[in-house]
Amino acid sequence: MAGGGAYICGEETAMIESLEGKQGKPRLKPPFPANVGLWGCPTTVTNVETVAVVPTIMRRGGNWFASFGREGNKGTKLFNVGGLVRSYLSSSSNHLLGNVNNPCTVEEEMGVPMRYLIEKHGKGVRGGWDNLQAVIPGGVSVPMITKSMAEEALMDFDGLRKYKSALGTGSMTVLDKSQFILRPQDIIKAVARISSFFKHESCGQCTPCREGCMWMYNILQRFTIGNASIGEIDMLDEISRQIEGHTICALGDAAAWPVQGLIRNFRPLIEERINQYKASGTL
Figure 1: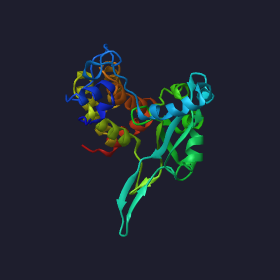
Figure 2: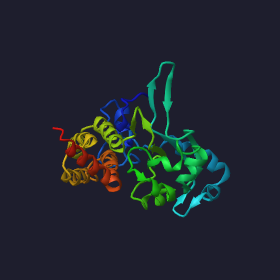
Figure 3: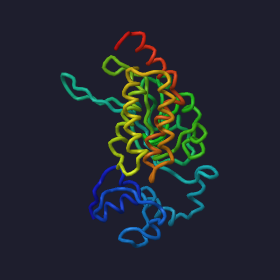
Figure 4: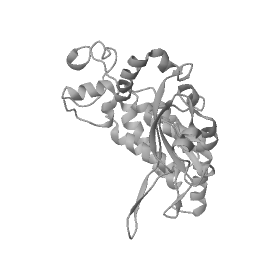
């Protein structure tokens, strides 16, 4: 059965709405899909990763699966180790540049150290560990962390909560300090691009998300060049917190958290960009 698609349809009730031929917009809960789901019938919605591991758990038993990980973070998980991939056209061919030497997806136990994943499976950060700038631990919807945090972080729920981030999908985006077309990779611009994505994918049903995502994107666009005031950093943080927890689904949270992570962990970088812009005298 074909649905309407869109990122928002990853939310279970938006998927159900889409499958019923309606716009893919999340439903208010309760009632939950387990009681009133597709066509009003009880429905269980789960993801492919969960379904895929069920046969192995049935074969080997729950105790075997629970032997992996630590208390409250049991089992195994698919982790993606990758980075920003950019392409440019040379005279001979199209080159792809990743931020780790071996982008890959692996299954590991919960609680595996982030650095181990990057160095063992990703074959290290391009240019070495000291070239690491930041890591987004679990997909673009979670706050990015600094290099020092990445050195100690464990890839599970509690391990990343310690650094006010989240496991999310377990898909890591590694950002290094390497130059790209004479410019280093730009953390502020990366978060602005993430904000652009959520602005585009918001279904528009909830006012905080519909309006707030646009406001955050507009401010971040100015932050990328420094055309802002220092006071707008706190204003941006306040906007993100007016979105977080005030929407029907978690897309509002997903849009707010990368912005909060940027401000919390890389505020000096934003302030430096603003001061540089002022010093340049650009109007």
